[in-house]
Length: 424
Length: 132
Image 1 (cartoon, rainbow over the protein chains, first blue to last red):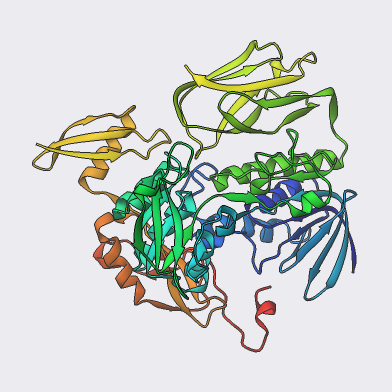
Image 2: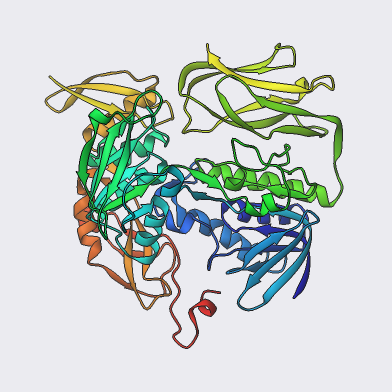
């Protein structure tokens, strides 16, 4: 089957849903939303915990409720403008915006789009990605897989649990499994700080007296058919296990919460350049990749800690697609690069490309490498002169940091703006 | 004189606070960076409350479970007992988001409500058609 659309969106999680709705509000009429799962909402329906929407809706919702708000709008406001295809897998995207997808009803689909939004989200790092020695028994899950079993499919994946990694999903699953009657023995974090939100540490671990051990990791997994025990050890400054500190913990289940990787196979195959740190495409302030008209938002671009920020990014893209299709935009003579400096792991967007009349400021998102208190975030020009400066009480790698770049400092002479975070 | 250590979750700073108390009453809070910390310390010390999100079994639905939550926060100490009570509940499909699944959970006056829709299974159709 051959189809033509003004906009094709790949992925109907919070990013894709927001992009679809906002594109529609900005005059884009002929939109196709492609989703590989049976339902819309991406990962949200399995995130049954509360804590969503505090930023965006100013009220506290669960994941499924947050998703439903957008799905409802899509059903009510745009019965004709957005075509939705679920259980549809995109298998290829070319640089000239041809998409090949498959599903049971249509078979092979050839879609030609004028603009494409990449909203494929991310996936969890697995045991293989961190290479733990030992046997290969059953009982080793990523936290998100366990979450789907428990919350959607109705299975308890185990009874005695060790969680490796203090990412948010790991901590949330430690609570969830405890509530469902499992015993979570410990959560291990190789770094000296939590990689998740402080609220999750308090309400998921402390509330249930689940110990969180920093500077610890699993050095061995043992078990015949099923996991029987793990060996855990403290690590030194170079994250190497200290043999004298090894101890055995009996358990039948290991949950991994060891990081998320943006799912960019389609992006890579289309030849779009990725940022080695975010593992997402390099984008301008419209979240547009190096191929004009191909945009990216949400966790496929960089891993967010709040769905609310994913929605915000989806909306940026929705508006940008509207302008792109109307050719209502003006490029700068040359782009200004935003460069990560001291203690900044990455920045998004990575460059500023457009002159936008009336724009006052541009929000820049970043993640720090190490936690620090009482810091100053400085915006520096090519010669190291301070163009802008913000105070911040605390920064941690677990919480995304944002600053505004005032439009007035964007001078045509500037090639790079470096963002540096140092103690005040 | 008693001492309790708690971490404030009002914002990302996560102040480590020490609460001193006598006969169940707070006498001082140390370590908070702002007034929100005092309020949080008081709530957490006197009667910590939590929203309880979990799932309930669905009969005849396109999915085996529906996600639910307590409409308001309930006392933290009741969470595990509430889970035992919720484990006994079954609900017939279809389930609508916001539908009350159980009134007055454990005498708290708080209802348990569905947080998603679950359609009824029409057994004549293959499952992938129903979910459309």
